[in-house]
Length: 68
Image (cartoon, rainbow, N blue to C red; front, top):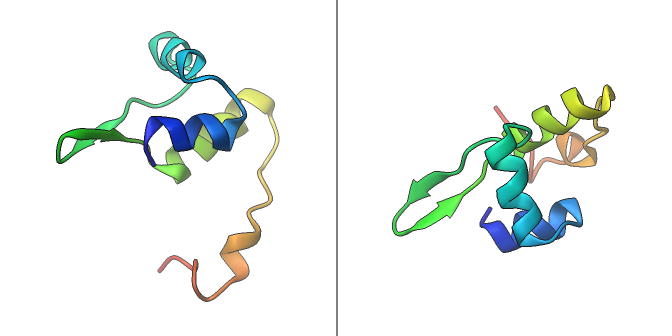
């Protein structure tokens, strides 16, 4: 996801995303084409570490979103 989508996903300002990435609390983006993108699973994993809670991802049980 791009930074604006990530900001909405985490309910943060884009500038806060940059600050959290710089602090190492969010993963670095990867460049796809000309834009930076974040992996939702990498972000979720880091949020789990920060909060100490597992994220209940409702998408895992949906065929459309299932990984595998």
